[in-house]
Image (cartoon, rainbow, N blue to C red; front, side):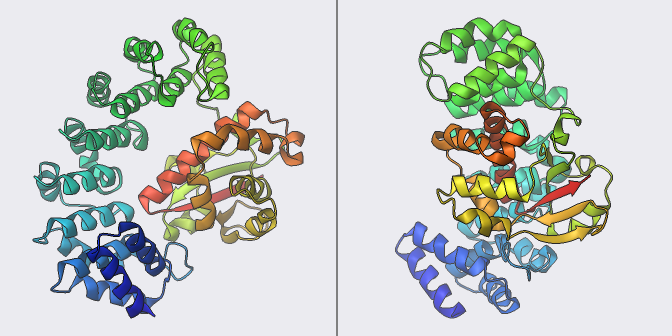
Amino acid sequence: MIEDLVAQALAAGARGDDDARWTLVRALQVDGRASTHREAVRLCESDDAARRQLGADILAQFGETSHERLNRCASAPVLASLLQDPVDAVVASAIAAHGHLSLAIPPERLDVFASHPTVDVRFALALALPTCGGEQAEEFLIRMMSDSVDEIRDWATFGLGSMLDSDTPEIRQALLQRTVDPHNDTRAEALVGLARRGDRRVLAPLRRELRADVVGRLAVEAARDLADPGLLPDLDALSAWWDVDAELLTEAIASCQSGRRGEQSKDEGRGKVGLLTDFVIAREDEADALGEAEDPADTWPTLEAKGVETVKLATLCALAANDSDDADAFAGAFDLVAGDTEEGPWILAVPAEIVAVLAGIPDARLASIASRWAETDELQMDGWSAAEARDFIGKLRRHAKQALTDGASLFLRISM
């Protein structure tokens, strides 16, 4: 069975069918058995470059949906050796694997990769740096924000502006420089990064974006997050024609009217039913530490969940999956993995299939899903509005995407 999947993946790669190859890679990743892990390691040690690359791709997210997931340390040595592979495609896959597994890449290798002549190597590094760059992540992300390739600048700007919470004069200046980038997505990510940090120097470039003939969603998100009353005339003008996301525009206007930045306080995150709930991104082996932590946000990326628990989350996933009958199945898929079973907190692992559903919610359906979710009995009892639901789903989607990008687990932490 393993040998058949490997052979099919190699054949798909040889004929250039990337979609088929990655489908087979995913099947090998979710297998989770030690024998499959050993086969992936053997592939990494092969004399054939295609086999080495396949092995690295399998190890990158091996077993993430399995209870038998092997410790990332088991994959570290062989992946580290591939960072010096003579074939660039193998190096790129090894870099990506380091990012998924949060394995540090030595600074001297980061320096080589950041200026590598092969675009795929630099692109892989731009994606991986927030989780594999260690203390040097900010330095190299800033460096790669000046890359000649649009997509590399885009991902480096996203990594620095949104994936990292660091806030230094150097970071703000680097983001400010990207607000005049010729690439639309890079420019938009810079606006969001500055708005998240409350830097009012973003006002002028943000006004330019809001007055353009084509206004992207990220520009309106940045306006909402900055919450500056000076943006109200431009947002009001948008309301006459901008139909990308009417609820987001309404929220941006309300935020700027109140002059209060969009981050919620901890009290607001408590929900209306007496539950404290948080979605926390952490490694699987950190579940026990998460159960013992007084405040998970001090250590891990944390989204305050406003009382959302397994039933509400399962309902949301069923709506996103277009199958209301899936709600019960989703609700029964959570496993209690850590915490005090009697008094809490309770740490539940969010199943990988639910993480994938959340991360994959498309912009085009976000508002309609939020509206239907807000109409459910559970959210009606807690007094949620459609706007609140849409905002929360947007944040949860981004959180789920970050978990997938980090190759980490997503936990639901519940306490009273």
